[in-house]
Image (cartoon, rainbow, N blue to C red; front, side, top):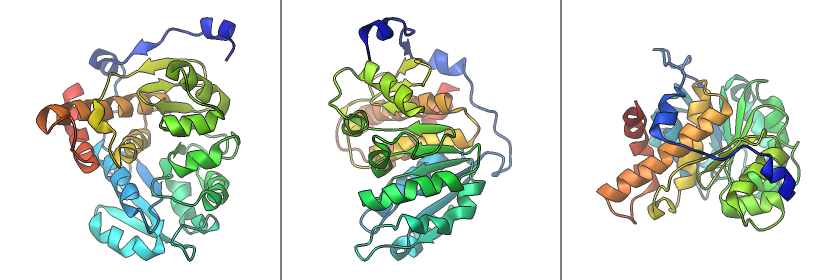
Length: 292
């Protein structure tokens, strides 16, 4: 981004509990459908746990109904492991990756979901690239599409591949570099550039940016958050809040803040290192309540 353009952007805003309280989430009702329907597409043979973590995170932040679209070979096991979820078996390649064209098996769920998370546990770049536009076309007009992991790799260099509806991207720094086509060197500026280039809200390493240049920064969540499955917990939390009716920027800010707060709490209670992504997921509800 040219230096002149950077100077015209609004200053970054620090996310505090006070800011979150002044930006309340949609008031929940008693019906699970009124609290939002989440669909997670992922969970190939080698990594079904990623979709499971993300789906449980969505429920922990108050989403009402969950469906996991996962590889056919693991669908029964996933259904038993996450009894709170419906399961859609997806066709697989001989290597156990999910076929891109096979996402049509979840067409009705894509059309009916309030928020769709695509990526956790996908492991074939070519098949994911085939899947992404199909999923975007099948999703409802107002469905929020959240992209993580391999879905971000498929999107890199192709901003329109995921359609033009409301979108949230949740890259880590390596995925951000791939999306930018260069190394990251200034995460504040890079998050803003990603949001502008891809026309999406972006949550990247504690920075949340919107296409209009707004940038919000979340405090450090402690080093222990750098653990296997942590990104799935983050993406799932954001998706769950979007399903509840939070607009994309609000969902990303709240989800990123809750994820960081869970890391700080677990660091104090368990240790700076060694807590698990499943513990992050289970901590989200308490952190949501703590904000009030």
